[in-house]
Length: 160
Image 1 (tube, rainbow, N blue to C red):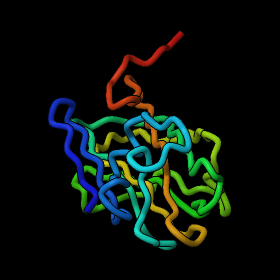
Image 2: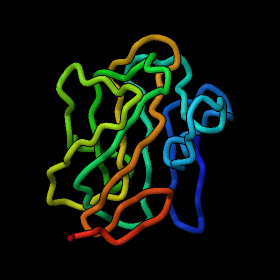
Image 3: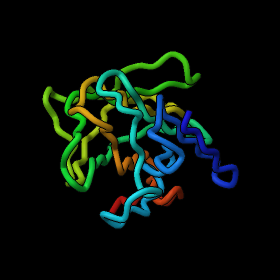
């Protein structure tokens, strides 16, 4: 549900649910959100408050070193208990980062370092608990060891 393929770049965004077709999983990764413009710029779950997820499948195995997450502009309906998971087969996931409880994903971008030596191609934000009524994650950016994923493109990492 909530799947969208980007054949040109090879990234696939999916979610456990979505409120409707205006709130697709891919919206969270497109970096087009400009604030308070309504549908088409955010992913919203279908009234879930426990054990829901959003993920991106990369076209190749990559090792990430940081994620940036942001919740709703209104700073309500926040996700507060969550973890970052990874997989190479889209079935068996390992936890890469367990956020201290509570770690609210509000309307400001927050960055979290990820410490792993392994490469994966599926990265999933598993939302364990959230405030009631359509919690979502507006922006999910992953920084890879040699590239950064932003605006659905890969750029060389600036080592300077």
